[in-house]
Amino acid sequence: MRLILFGAPGVGKGTQAKLISSKLNIPHISTGDILRQSVKDQTELGKKAQEIMNRGDLVPDDIMIGIIQDRLHKPDCEKGFILDGFPRTVNQAVALDKLLKEMKFSDVSVVNITADDNELVNRIGNRRACKNCGQIFVLKEIEGKTNCPSCKAENSFYLRDDDKEDVVRNRLEVFRQNTEPVLDYYSKQNIVKSIDGLGSIAEVSKKVSERLNII
Image (cartoon, rainbow, N blue to C red; front, side, top):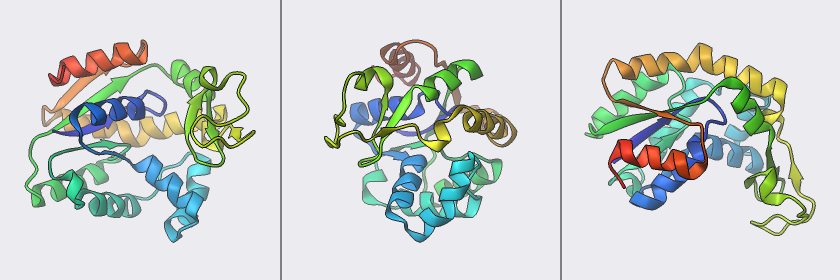
């Protein structure tokens, strides 16, 4: 199964992608994770992307397309994959279609998870990241804790710049302007399955599984 998870920042794409990945044993490819790791490692890509990401703007198409092309050619993608955070522009979608055609992959579905802006701002504002390992938690997961549950680093929780309300609202505006046309692009191909993203993680996961027939 080859999936593109689509939706605004904070809608739960990453969480649902991890659950599907575990269920189907196919890789979850998060461009956000790849970029953040590059920033942490201060690679050439990371240095270019850091300032752009901190503003909440989109990383240029040529950089993102190169990242995805390299990743999809790895052996673990032969049986399927889940793309999370790509494509974000119509140009990226066209380039991805070309790449998938070259790789002879035709069974692609787009899962569109939806939620309103205020819900998304609240969700993202309630996230904290670990400065040491980069793992992201919701506040209730770390309430009363001083050590990261993942890497045990002490007093390492912080609100990422791109999770602050003003940046989040800019990210949502960027999403509307640049990324929603991607949904129209895929809708014309009749491969979009829309899911209401409101509810618990388990409730949304059940909706996704039912639409994809992977229960």
